[in-house]
Length: 503
Image (cartoon, rainbow, N blue to C red; front, top):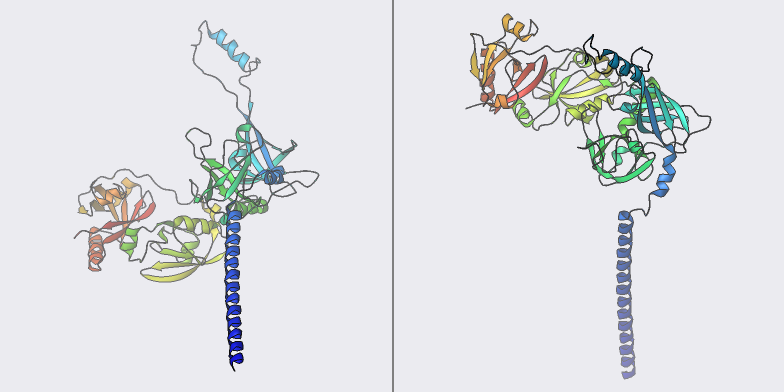
């Protein structure tokens, strides 16, 4: 019995030892797995943040598609100063001989001269389509494309778009040309590495590197969507490509911000997702064909949103609906466009770009807020280029005060009559209140109202006389509104202004 007990004790001890060893083994394996996981994470982080040792392989791959562009233009010869020597003066013959020598000596006056300019571009297809800036080739009589190899070919203009400063050229070659493809500019992130290529200051082929400094920059155009970069861009780089690290063109180098004309690390490239749409249209039609909604709009500010009872300051407020697609569809002045073709409208810039990127003739659904209720209206878009010359404005002279006046909201107001309409140069059937004076210390003056403006609506209701405006003020106060929305017209151009109501 004692022997069996000892045997059981030894067996139990062995089990405990084995269990302890297994636990130690599991702990060791767990520790090793933890260390291995840490090493893998560290390796991935190092790979993610590591810069390439050299950009040379990428530059060698894409450089054959980048070109220098030389343009030549014939301009009139300089005639020189006139009237320096009075007729009959003894010096008259001397100055005549001097001018003749400068003008060719044949007595036929100044000769035309040829002016040259330099820029950059890039080939986008093997059959010779070349993209550059419009300002590089604008007005050129002759365009020469020089390739990285030194080969030169003459180019012709397929089409241009001054709104985005893009031009499409074409060269003819006996063999397929090296080309690059467009990348997705929307995928570019602030901080991503980029390469700019071109012909800065006429020095020939040059490469500079930097990062994406900012996205969605607007300079001055309606359809602007620029990538800002600190890669060196100088005069002569215009029209050249901005590459991502995959060799895709994500921008066309167009402008710089500089006090001295040289690069200070603030350059702008038109985003490729804008350029591709323009290039496709230029290739197909030789011109751009942008969608047109046919409304005048302004941003919805906080005070405008409060005056209209909107939950937030977003969307595009319609200030006028001239003849066009929107009017035919039933959109109205005072509507706030909340979404266009299923995409939420944040502000006027976003709406303009989205409409411009839409196809001419497309039927789109526009959701608006009208009198506190949301409704969706179907609109068939027209063509923006066909509407560029619409609705000319008249001048806005100062208006003299009429006997029937009223001071309200910091404004001196008078109902329109024939004399005031003639004075302001406005249509004979327009009704409203003319601003004949303004308190320069008032909120109205601070928000841009001036003598000669005409108020045609208040609280999104038409006003024909001072009593109408007083009713709108009272109604807004009764509704608990802090401000009143006015529709103001100046030289025919309308805009909404929200003025704070007093106690």
